[in-house]
Length: 478
Picture 1 (cartoon, rainbow, N blue to C red):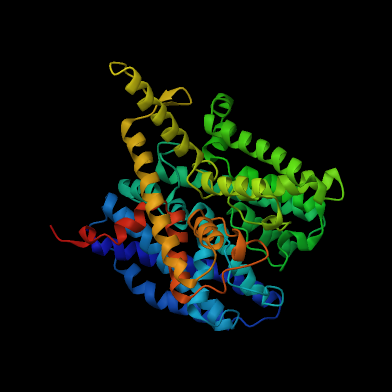
Picture 2 (cartoon, one colour; picture 1 turned 45 degrees about the horizontal axis):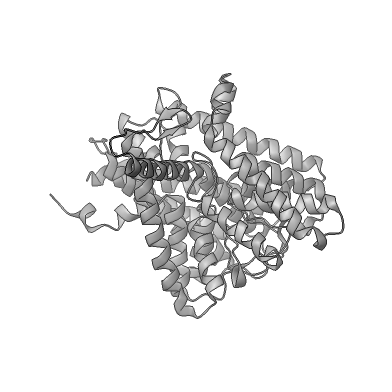
């Protein structure tokens, strides 16, 4: 383990977080609010990080283990320090609650312990939503985009970017990071402009765009997006939630004119098909609860894209919808969106691989001498990737079951515990029961909040970085 380089990278990340905090500090200044909470937090981050940055190690090489550990510790430390403005401002006096809220922000989950949102300082709420945008693409990808790194930096990208396979869009890793962030920024700006056109104020357009781009779902209104009573804005946010759930590699292929890559993507076809089928079923099931067919279509589309993209915004309390509709939404919570997007969930590409591998095993049982290859998009999938996808599902179910059992000590209903764990592990936010769109996570015990906070980070980093971080063999000297 290259401890010196690990410390150096962590300190760089903390300085980047300090720089990000200057933006909500400016927002607080604009609205005449106290900037002290942000100044103190920035000061603490600079004091902790600068000594480590000034002593860059001679040996800058990192490998897979350092990559995973760096990513896991970075997200933990960002959440730990990022919680300070909430505590220092008095918006969330309890540190564990603030840590939960910050983990929810950076992991783009959107689960909240706040019972009342309106009335809190705008600078603090801006930081709360801005953490979604930072966490959506990943702060280490941002670091790779702005700072030149060695050839081994690919391990950082692989540890942070979601999906069963990770690679470079172009030969140079830094250029890949720049392209990803460039697409991310352009799409975010496009949504802000579209929301401004609908009549939404600039501040609200920004924070809602952050929540959509990062597929997080934090809102600055108690009633979420429904509080605006703006159908045009609902359509804009719903469409962009769907857009941000698509693999960013496909947008790059569109930019360079490789439309065939878009057309042959099985994952994209399944993703859009799931959304279309879900909207249709929800519309049929809930039609009698709406005043008009247009309201039904809009709400069904919004809630479907919100769940399948793991954004978590809401315009309706879907906990009151029929059983089939709720089960369908729970299924979408599990699948999530496309690999390489800002969304959470197991990922459709991983489920495709596991499903096709299962079909292959059945064929092999029927025809023992047959040789079958798992193919996605017409290309053979390496056996290592197939094995990784199967192992991921196993680990995912293990973490899910253990977490659901652990938080059951609070005595809430099975529906609350099951969907609450699912919503946190898949970075969705709202579930059913006590944690439905009309509820929150405030009544959970400190123990359960810590468990769910780690679930959010487990889900955002797709298990392995956090598992490796807490594995004794990682720190054992050979």
